[in-house]
Each structure stands twice: as structure tokens, then as C-alpha cells.
Length: 255
Image (cartoon, rainbow, N blue to C red; front, side, top):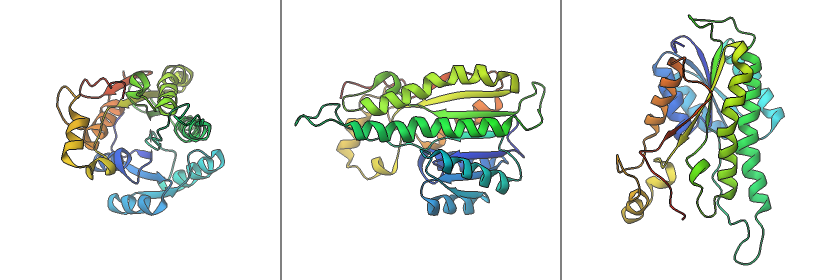
């Protein structure tokens, strides 16, 4: 699908991978709705790229429904491109050293990461189904979800995070098969270790420890590299129903 002239929705678009994706899609000619829990950060990015800012907690189905309606109104139609970047990365042992259970952490992580992705995917797909098909393959839209290499390499303390990201990866194929008749593709990206606001402030020795296990390139990923993969997925119609690791060949150790 050609990106120029299309409407796009990016969740978690106020920072990190989402902000880089929103900016990149805008440079390619898309009109972007930037959705974030923090409306002010969404407004900052949207103002920069001439897009639309929407505030919502993706883990709340009613808020997602309202946010999708706002995005459609602001874009002048349903987005043909939806990228789910919103998520949290809470860490906790299933049973702590003091015997405490991390049930609340698990529930919150599943609600935001998995349910949030599912809510946005559901509303986006329903809206896309109303669009006329475009291109040689009669596409109506592309939905890209964000998994993680923790889907396969979950570390100690990542039980909740790995479970949420594994479910997102598992969602890709059945969703793609369901939406095939409507001409909607679904793909997941599983990022490895990337530059974030948190890692930017770490001491060099700590950063060196983190990157020591990354084969090549031996560095943290750049958010723009995630955004470029989004571009490749959108523009390559034969990518569908799969999860792509974007990780410089890293395999996470136990801890």
C-alpha cells in the first residue's frame, strides 16, 4: 500500500517508537493521528508533524472507542494504517523473595499491553472494513502490533511482560486470516533492545553491560529503525500474519 495520502493512527505516539513512527509516516505523506495516554506529548508530536492529537488509555475499551471516533473525525476518514506502540514494561517476580505475589502487576500489564492492542486492533479493523479497496490487491488497511523479543526470550522478572507480548505475537496469524476477506493485513514487530528515554540517562558502564550481548550491530536499536520497518510492512503487500524480530540477532540471557 502506498503511504502518501493515507490516514494513519499510531498509539503510544507521544514518545519512543511511536513518536518515531508517527514522524516517519508523516514525512512519507501520511496524515497521522497521534494517540497517547499523555495528551500533552501527543499534542507536541502532532503539532510538529501537522497531525491530530488524541488522548486515551488503551486499556480502557470505552476510551479506545471514543479515541477512534476522534481520530476518524480529525483525519477525515478511517485510518488505513494503524500501528500499536502503546505499552508498559513492568518487572516483577511471580513470587517475590518475601513471598509476595505480583498479581496486580500481571493484571495491569495484560490490560495495557494485550487488551490495549486488542481493543485498538478491533476498532481499527471495523473502521477499515468500511473503506473502499485500493491498489492492485484491493487492500483496505494494515495493522501493525508491537510484540517484543521477550515473547521468546523472556528474562527473570518478565513473566507478565513476556506473556503479554507472546499473546500479541500469537494474535497476528488468526487476525490476518480473519481479516483477509476484507483486504486487511496484520503483522507484528518484536523489537529487541532499543534506545529509550530511560536508557539515554544510564551511565556508560551500564549501557555497555546491556549492549554486550547484542551481536551486530553491537548497539541499542534506534527508534527510526523500527519506523523504517513499519514503512516496509505497509508498502510490501505480501507481508502478513507474521511476527518479525528486529533485534540485531540478540537472544536475551536469563537475567
